[in-house]
Image (cartoon, rainbow, N blue to C red; front, top):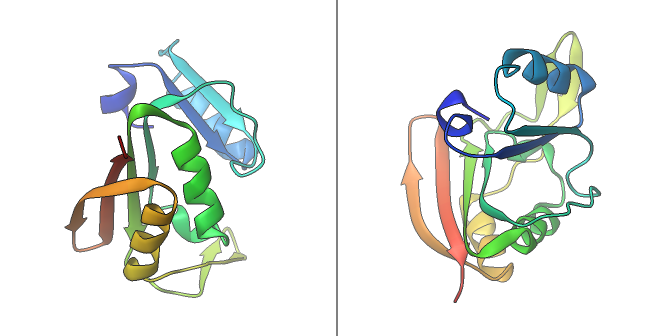
Length: 140
């Protein structure tokens, strides 16, 4: 969640790391319109649908990409948008606090295909120096 977004609407964020969720709660303490959840996105039972869902440079942590994209799609309102930013860095692991995290990269072609398989329409693709960004929406 960025301040640009949270200052304009209600926001929900989910992360598996208690430290990350605690850090976000502290840094966003001035906003009462946030719901920060410590949990596994793929297993978490959300009680609402969303206008916009975005995943920014974290998708390489998810092994089952199609399952995740299908869940994103199921959580969108009928006019909802999904924004997915995928890192161009294809390292097979990430060193974080002296721990090695295994990364699960996929090709842009496969990710685009999974977005379409999930029932979403790819509206736009943007390539930056560091990422490939997909903007998709529910098919009407």
